[in-house]
Every structure is written in structure tokens, then in C-alpha cells.
Image (cartoon, rainbow, N blue to C red; front, side, top):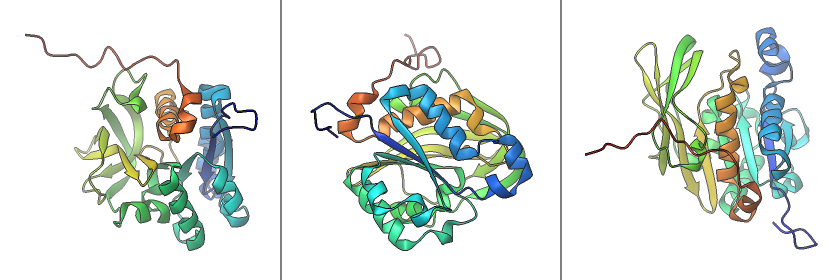
Length: 255
């Protein structure tokens, strides 16, 4: 993580988008005129500034935008996929798995729970219950001291979203950060962390393509915080944030 002059370089962040819905679905284009991946990248650039170099890649590029040379330089990878999981070449999945084990951070978003790389790292089929519709989702932060929750002052409310529900077939997480509840009464572990080798993995469920979830300021803040948490230790020094601590919503019991 050192440049030739000995100074630390900003960590390289790559937002990977499947970019199928973005191109083919009018409703998605209305919600995300810049595409989902570019919307996420723009938010990260705004929140992290010069503390990170944020780029994007898509399925349609050679090697899915994930060549050996490019992946070798990535410090944190954000992944959104849905309808083309099986298109991802196994050699690319192997490449990503090695990089995570070597220390690359991985943030898996919404329907990326069925991506080859997430299933490979979890060792399970990662199935869950779901219902497409316009449910209200409330994401309850339950571990306020965790860096990913920095600046989150209370529950995140999404007025309309797709329902994801338990059981969610993943290994028990190292940290459970969010539990969601929906208008149908379902609950879901919507934010979880694991380590795999030297790398950190964060799954965050909000992000159905027809809902403007990635425009939500607190969702954007969670993703920016997650980039900071997932970055390899050498890169984290360049990502110290001035965002406030999560105070005011978690009160200690007094005697």
C-alpha cells in the first residue's frame, strides 16, 4: 500500500455492476439514470473524497471488468448482480476468492447473495425467502459501536422495497449489524460481516433495482463506512473519517 515516495496511496475501490437491468428496464433507468453502479460510485466519491480512488466495472467488459491485473490492484470490491450470476467465469471467481483471502475487502449487495463469489466464500447456497412488492422495510442497527454504523443515528426506513426474509442460508456471521422487519411481519439479517483469510466481507441487503435505495443518504453512508472497514489494514490509515459516532439512539440503562 505504499507509493514509490513512501507515502500511502488512496485505496482503490471498484464498484462492480451487472448492468443488465440498468440497460434493459425502463423503470430501473428512471430510478437510476446514471446506472446503479455509477450512482453508488458517485456517492462514495462524494463521501470519501480524496481518501479513496473509486472506479466502476461491468459484466459487459472483457473479463467482466475483472482482469488479473485489475483485480490485483483492488483494495475493496462492491458487487451488485441479479440475473447473470451464471455468466461469471469460474476463473474470475477463483481470482476474486484468492484476492479476498489475501486481504481485499468485499461488499456484496442485495441480490448478490446468489453470486458465485459470495456462495463460494460462504460455502452454502445462500438461499432466502423473498417477495417482490412495495413493503416498508425498517433496518434496525443493533451493534452501534461497529465502524460500519458510524454516523447512523437510528433505524433506516425504506418506504418501499422488496422483502427478503429468513431463513437466510449463510454461516453465522462474525458480526450482525442490522436486522430488518417488513410490513408482512418478516424479519431478515440485513447487514452481516465475516472474515475469510485476510479479507473482510460485508453483506448488505438493501438495493432492489426498481427502488431508488442507493439514493438514500443513510444507505450511502453505510456503504462508505463499509469501504473503510473492509479496506486492508495498510489502506485504512488513509480512510480515517470525520463522520460522527453513532450517538443519541443507543441509551445505556441506568440504575
